[in-house]
Amino acid sequence: MVSPDRHYPIDYFALQLNNIPGGTLIAVVSLIVLGALLSSWVFNRNEFHSSPTYVPVFLYALTASLFSLVTVNIPLLAANLFLLFGSAYLLDVFRQARVLDEYFRAGFWLGCAALTFPPYLSLALGLFLCIVFTRALHLREVGVAFMAFATPFILWLSWKFWFREWDYLFLFYKVITFDQITFSNTFDRWELFFISATGIALLLAVPRFFLLGDRSSNKARSVRSTFITLSLAVFLALGTGYLFSGFWMPEIVIVPFTFVGGYWFTNYRFSLFAPIVFYAWLALGVLLTLSAYHFLQ
Image 1 (spheres, rainbow, N blue to C red):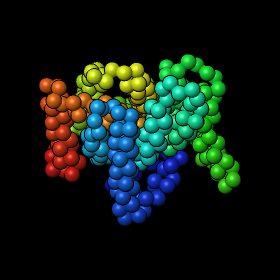
Image 2 (cartoon, rainbow, N blue to C red):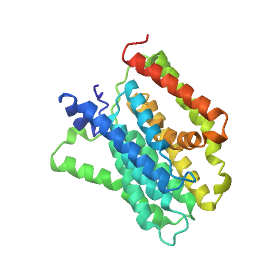
Image 3 (cartoon, rainbow, N blue to C red):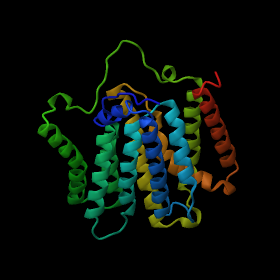
Image 4 (cartoon, helix red, strand yellow):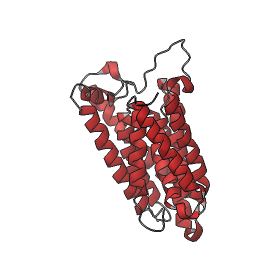
């Protein structure tokens, strides 16, 4: 398992792991475990489901592990931790009189996510939309959130200035080539099947995510609207990453799929298709694993 060099700021440290026997594997496993635990904490803390559930832990760990067989993306796995922290504070905001503290913390953690994985700069738009849709527009709240979002970048620039690393002041690095890099020729057959199955399962899960049933409170609607808004910003990062880095990174779907798909699969008793979709997706994950270890052509 080797971490590719996309020339993101954190790749300097990620590439050092390639020189340590098993270093990249240990880092990936550790980040996946931490992300799974954090996703469960955020999911249950904000009561996405009527009772505590461990499906998000299982789904995050499984999804991140399977996508790591497609491509190892340590910056994304690390950024997902910051994304989950930031979303936890955003989901806390509802009708409080003062929310400057929550917005500052959310902006800071989302800024850390964007610095760690630069395509997540799209989270700045998601942060703004979450503030606007959740509460009446207050320029002070927006200003505090974006000041916090910029803080990690200011610290990063200060670090570069202190150590005189002026040759590495960039977030994106793209090699211009005449070769056509399409989504279909980037991945092999089983990888494309698994990626497509994940996208289809996510689309099928979205309607159920908004059907609140007995939890149709204003707070529940606010939580789901905020998360979907943030998820759209995450999906925007897919285009940002390809446009400025030249890489297709479908593993960006990990966090949205964990929450939206996790909610649908948790309510499998009320859906005829949820168990079928889940086991079909799981079967393709098994085939992807066999293909990755060359047991399947």
